[in-house]
Image (cartoon, rainbow over all chains, first blue to last red; front, side, top):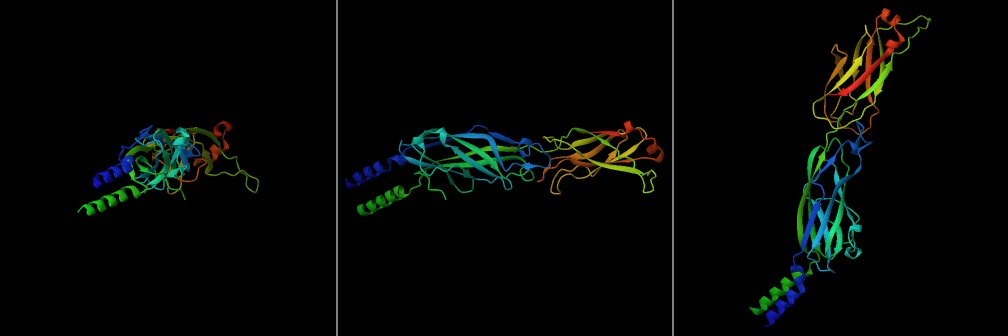
Length: 164
Length: 173
């Protein structure tokens, strides 16, 4: 009898964990092109890519199956680095979600690294969190052809830890 | 036995609930980043004029076997296919021979260079080697091109103002 009560108690305490939280990330484009218009100055032979290139790319993030007041943290990391010294910056658009869905310690942006880094701190379910992408420190001499960008997103319980 | 089971349940409960960062869900994504080849597709036209005649210190007219002038070509770049050829078309006044010299216009680290020198193919065209891509860090003002025109003494004396103009057109084929 005592065991049953204990099990029920445990279930009640961790039932929110057992719910099926769902994370969905959908990109607008499957392919993004970098061309001579992204040179600095644009269309100039010998010029290098601009230090920061806003990409014609965006993503919509949906977090479902979460109780309304439950805090969560969205993290991201790359599984394969970009060519050369190029880096990818992801910026969450906090205006794309309701203020009550924004948790504490939401970072303004994230430079994608090989280890999971906090990207967005949320509360409750979110339908369409918009992410924008910026390519940084790309060089004509290093970045060529087609490079797949592999990004792993993680949804974790609890808000994001405070930034540095 | 029951006590052990209780201990196990408590330990399990502690492990599950004490962690502040429980991974709920994960998604692998990818998109392609395509870097277009950056290369020269310059089309420009510029007129150059032969240098005016020179005088010696004694005041007499000086003649040289060749007159060299250097100019910069304006250009733009856009994607081109590999192995694109750049043709220098030069209209040379009748009776004159000419030679077109071009130098690498990008830093040594670049992957695109114009031909070190182009050979006149007797049809007023200078065919370069293939160009493909480019790299570099410093914006260039133009491609330094040196055109050397050989003149005989009689040709020099008979130079006509209208013949002083050379029209050069760069075209990517």
